Length: 458
Image 1 (tube, helix red, strand yellow):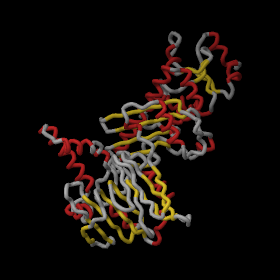
Image 2 (cartoon, rainbow, N blue to C red):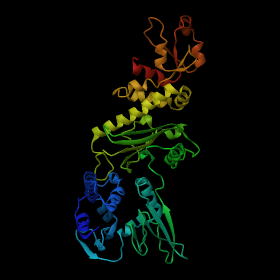
Image 3 (cartoon, rainbow, N blue to C red):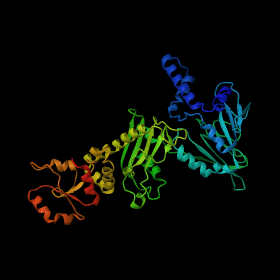
Image 4 (cartoon, rainbow, N blue to C red):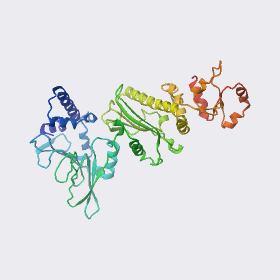
């Protein structure tokens, strides 16, 4: 940054440098498109910023959160502009800051946080890694951690994280971008350079999983790797397990949504189903908003794994809550309808595969009928996913197929509740229907009768 940019961006609370930068890049792109006389250097700068729409900052207070855990924060920076001067910004967070020139930085920015005595745990490599993996696993730029240990002592020293990793002394944690000198590193198109002065340093790439939901085409191998990534922290899921169905959904209207969902081949055991944790995460421009999208994915679809990335979410300042409940309801209806339509389509095109799904997840589908009985948002789709045993067909069929085989003048769907299929077939009540070749659906689970009562009609 230049001196003016430092004062404007770091010296003014609620001044969003991200929003200003994003607006500037968009204006540059517009000027180039209209003039058609861009220089090669200018074109390269714009192209390198093609993912600026992924910038999530908007409130202008993100940087100041560092003072929550730091007694003092230093920023060393030098602009990319030719013949620019390096600057050293420093503040203790009490309303004032100092600014002086420095030669200790090449191009880029380095941030040094001097942690408070009760916040030194934030320099622990495990805590840093878990934080980056949770919130910034899918950012466009590589995030490295330098695991630095003193030679001969074996004791952990300072750990650093950011697009470029850096180190410092005492209880400070450094973060840097682009390039710096001495003990700092940089990444762009260059290789990482790590100082090894009396240290043993190990460079760890934290965010090596790519956001495949943003890609136009995804290979089967990439799907498998991402599915395993989603399962890696689940003790009841093995890496050997796969998915039965997958769906990638993108749209720009009525909302900007990029999403990916998986239906596991095997359902988790009832032991792990009790909590009904939603395993679809909510992101905004690849930054985590909610680990569990409970307000978007209903509990009866808790077996679905995946990611929803929505750029239109009106976040609050902590990025932990969405401010527009109407917008979230709309998002929920869009993605849930898409998932159900996918299952409906698969049921029609590959019956045997769908019956495998239904064997594992029939209870969830039936629970969806009961939970949706008041709103009736998904009733027409869910009822097409139901399957019941037919005495005429000798197999599980849909209500649609049952109605298709109605006898002349038949207007009702007949069903018989029993705990056992053989008991139902041998019941004397069945004889009259068998004689007239009228089909009867056998309901083998207690929930089945409640489901049909809630449907009322088909």
